[in-house]
Length: 233
Image (cartoon, rainbow, N blue to C red; front, side, top):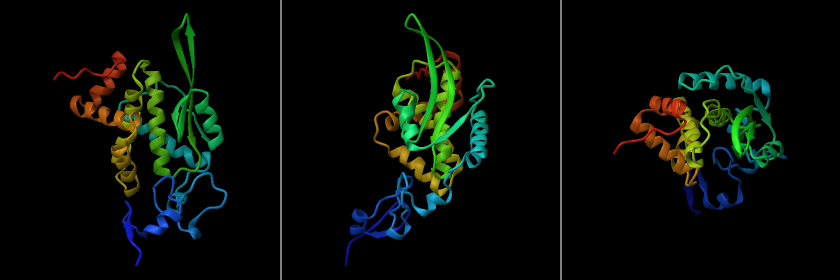
């Protein structure tokens, strides 16, 4: 008898298969040979494929929903026309190489204008999100990128990387927690456990700060001072 393991989803599988079969890039489920896609950019299980956002028409209503959610959180965009580019891996990698803010699933595209070495303004072109993500992950990535957009709109330019990425991850985490589905809980748990010093540790530090001062005060302090609120011990 081979040894069996149980994954996050409660699926039981043989230890041998864990080495033989690919894991889904988006939810970690093991993908058996008959479930595998041919020619796909990433390994996706049937469940993630089933809700995948492949076209702009599929993305548009979710993008609008996310913007409304951001507004309810207190993040306004001053009538900025927010645009979404649903793009393939090669194009997203090009955007990330050009120095735009982002990570492997999304990017915020902007142009910075300086004078005598000082930043005088930043123009936002929009956000780009990888095509083919399952719907809940697409929404979480969109929230993260719109967090970067809001920081630019609010004139917050000098946060350390851990604070900027941690803030955007906190927004995404709050969205997942509020969605409260099995899939969204997987992604919120992943953030809680992320070992990355910028994204993971940054998120946990920002969550602790928001817990201490209150989320509305965090937003208001960033908006009015461009800095994080000071916590008195």
